[in-house]
Length: 111
Image (tube, rainbow, N blue to C red):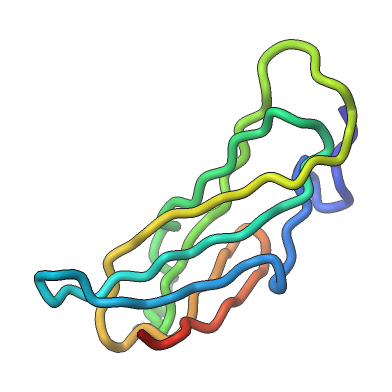
């Protein structure tokens, strides 16, 4: 199983992701971050998780990491579109999502 130049098995770019903010029934603001990455085999599972806070806080940014979970066993080496979608609570100051381990920045669409 070969990896992409950046050491990851799934290719992810800014244009592959969207971030949409909304308010739930309790009035809390949340953001749905979703995208589709190109993984070098089928069977990958992708998740987004909160990244450790930056040394200098940036109140306008939500910092995440994209996590790859490789498939078990043998799988054909076929480039496969693989979706990822997660929701996070945010405050009113958040304007963009930064997927730090991939150097991706996505503006948050207003609700």
